[in-house]
Amino acid sequence: MIRIVLADDEDLIRGALAALLGLEDDIEVVGQASDGRTAVELARAHRPDLAVLDLEMPGWDGLAAAKQLSENPGIPSVLVTRHARPGVLKRALGDGVRGFVPKTTPASRLAEILRDVHAGKRYVDPEIAASALTATSCPLTDRELELLRYAHDGGTINAIAGQAHLAQGTVRNYLSSAMTKLGVETRYEAARRAWEEGWF
Image (cartoon, rainbow, N blue to C red):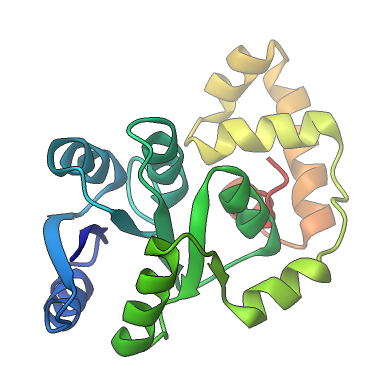
């Protein structure tokens, strides 16, 4: 029996996936969570064979949870996502993720992937893998990336300036430059894009 902890912040999707996987003779969902931190707590309590994690969740996302699980207690993870950027895939594989699948994957196929991962194999969706091989290089400077990292954490201009030890006007200039390079209108969009590409 393959025992799994399942995490997705969308209740309907999580419940449906748990029900579908529960129909498999050799898979048992032993815990469900709506965020990464709870998934880690459940995994440490139940010691499942695998964790199936949504990439995008509030608080700890799937990547953060997978990294925690790979380090302690050594539970492999499979990430599911609607949108997968090449950098996220690279970061995921570096953090011990054993599978990377789109949310469009049928439950029966996901069950096969879980069996393979449980047997020690890796699985990366072919389209995600192909996009990773054709990824573009980062057009941003180190300082722009640093400030976008703070913006990604939800920091205000004032807070970012304090963290980076820069004047607020200087922060605005760097963020504006990054937004222009990435063709987006807000610092949050720029931060999201940089995170999705795996630039920080």
